[in-house]
Length: 254
Image: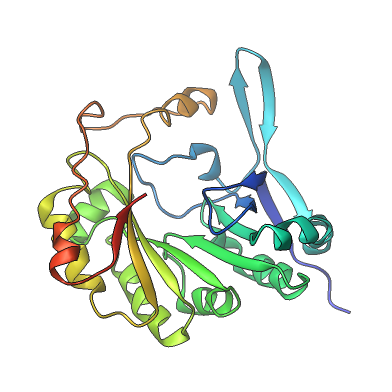
């Protein structure tokens, strides 16, 4: 029997109600290839364990699990997840950085609904491996212009759009989620470009516009990181649904 895959996890959140249908357990996998300046989970960027410092002391973030250990934990919660029409969500960080581990875990779950929460930046093979196994995908789509995407996320985003097109061929249903960042992702031009990009995509359920989280910056100091943004966090975001409605795309402000 081949050895089990291992995965680095920075949090497991039980009884989550905002990470997919029903009551869920969300597994946050450590490591992300993007460098979004507004990242909500800076402790999930590095693939390695790190020390977080706060007024209550220090704690190490990042624990190694074998696939078997994680499967045992999740299957032990299976009854309550199924009874509440929920399941397991794999988030991060970017869970596709640990695609083989996630896939191995999914293969051993006992009839539990699974959801992949991804930014879509991965090799086509890794994307296909996991996307083809889950029941639902939350696909983050932040910016369409490649130059602006590179400025704010560290890559040009072409690979993300390629995987979005691949997803329509894989056949797993998905929700496109747009994090609204004031003056960056929430511009009328960017929202219109996203609407044009996703219109007519097979398998898409809807588009969710996600409000900006002003509290995220507080995590950076604890992680020994600097939160430096060039936009006005205090400005109300432009949750403009019109570009989607004009193209008859189901859209909601989450």
